[in-house]
Amino acid sequence: MNALFLKGTRLMSVLFLVLTVLTGCTKSDDTVATPQTITDRILEDSQFSILRAAVTYAEVGDLLKGGNLTLFAPNDAAFQAAGYGSPTSIVTLSKEQVRTLLLYHVLEGPVPASAIPGGLNPVTTADKGIAYINKASDGRVFVNNAQVIQADIQVANGYIHSIDRVLTPSVGNLLTAIQTNPNLTLLTAAVNRVAASNPTLLATLSNDASTNLVTIFAPNDAAFRSAGYTDLAAINAVNLQTLTNLLLYHVMSGVIFSNQFQTGTFNTLLSGNRLTILSTANLLTIKGNKNTTTATVKQGNIPATNGVIHIIDQVLLP
Image (cartoon, rainbow, N blue to C red; front, side, top):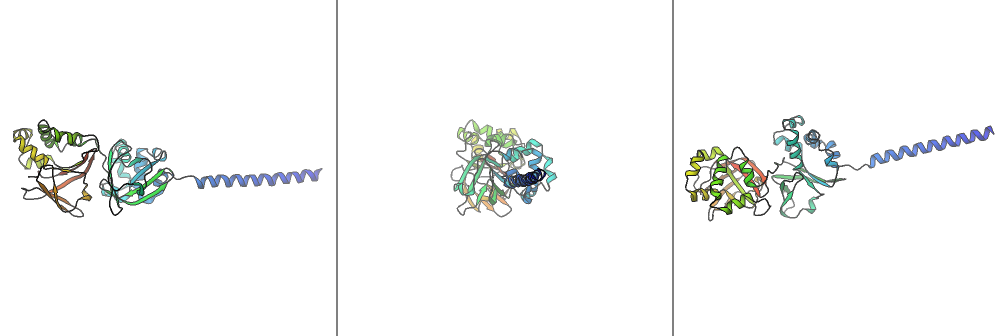
């Protein structure tokens, strides 16, 4: 009986050891097989150290793990070009600002590069803003003024596309973007004065749908003052038709970001009048018919639901 007991004990020990090994293997296999999410990839990819800090600071990691999403992910060089030189610099913004910034880079749904139609495609972002994806004829993909430099990083819950610029979130339609910018108060006054006599221009600027898209070269307050429009009284004193023509001369049909311009002349909404644009790798300048010097873009690529704004340092003269 003792022999049988010992034999049985040995058998139970062997079975227990086998089960332990099998259980351990199963857990290890499960760990290895766990699908990698967008958040997981950001946390481990060395090109996204500043983005990783932003995701952690804004507490959007769980959001980027769920659902089917596409992230246009600025790499470290993109953040550095935007003035965020290190992971710690992201805290100069509030958590809510960083959250809005990050969600503007997210689309709801998995979008591989191959699924993007050619040409310009307005899309709604996760923060309910509007971004513009442009697929060039050579297959390159741009979102606003950023280029996709590494496409189709596939993860369990969608795709990551690495981009070379940090995107500026949209802030409503063009009229709202102008009215809420503290450097465009004189342009706002000019638009308000012209609106009653030119409802078409007002409708173009205030349209909330991604239709009838336009590009605006918006002179800042310093530019208006240099051109003799020193204050609200000066805006109200100028001939109404002259002011209307002036505004129309600063607007072009279609959405054109700074990296899409080529050197040449471009039609404006002021019939028969064109702008001359010089585009180089690092500079975009614009010249009106009667300007003696060129205007420089001081802040470009401000997206809106119905177009894009480039703030310039001169009033363009037709």
